[in-house]
Length: 79
Image (cartoon, rainbow, N blue to C red):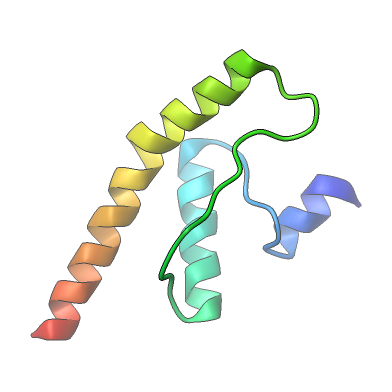
């Protein structure tokens, strides 16, 4: 149960930057794409430093890859 089950069902995304990227892409494919992605990067008793690290990793390692993926997909659709 708990967080691992929620991740398995696609209701919660967490892990390494590569894992998070893959989970977001898989989720987007299941639901037919993404318009907006809302993230909550702090939960429960997560310390402030861990929250900052999570946000930094997402911004530097996950978000640019998602932008590139979806910009490429949009460009291909327009051709």
